[in-house]
Amino acid sequence: MTYQFLLAFLPALVFFTRFLMEYTGCDYYHPACRWVTRITDLPLKIVPVKNYPRLNISALIAMLVMAEVFGLAFLFLMMPANAVMNFDTLWRLMLLIPVFLIWAVLQFMLYLMFIGAILSWIPSASVAPWSYLFMKLTSPLTAPFDRFIPPVGFISLSFMAAALLMSFVVFSVMPRVVEFALRLLS
Image (tube, rainbow, N blue to C red; front, side):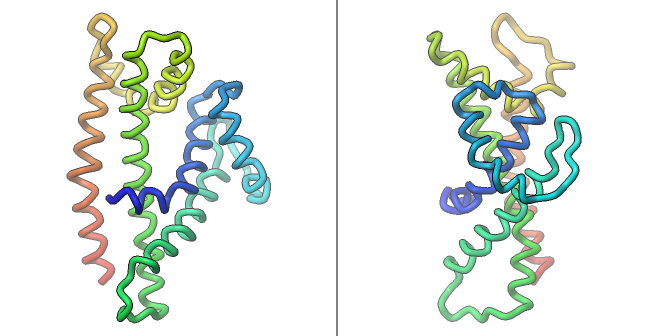
């Protein structure tokens, strides 16, 4: 996935971050958490959905809506000038956007994991809250590995296993899934 396409999903990823913050129980006094909360509060108040403890369903719905809007706009801009746009093409593109959204979310989580790993290597007290935030946001991916792979000293091998698995999924599996979805929809 190109970085331009990942940027097209940036508004949707902000809502995914809000969902992830509530799911993992991040510290809401952290500046990044406050920023995400301020941006997403008004749109989430508009979506009248019953939310469950730690599961913000309205954030997921808003994420899907933002992905459809901005993803379609990006795909329209990237289409060749001689492409025919009709209802059938629009419908196929709308069905393809959730596949690209899943790919963008997985790539976003992989970037969060790598940033968290790099920040954990810096022994500064000013970096520690940021490192903790990134580790907390990626804990849903590393928690299943923590049950089976014990840490070796201060090095978490479960994090490395999760990062390798995510890299394989993002860079090997998802391009094939998108190719299959394109063949299926054409």
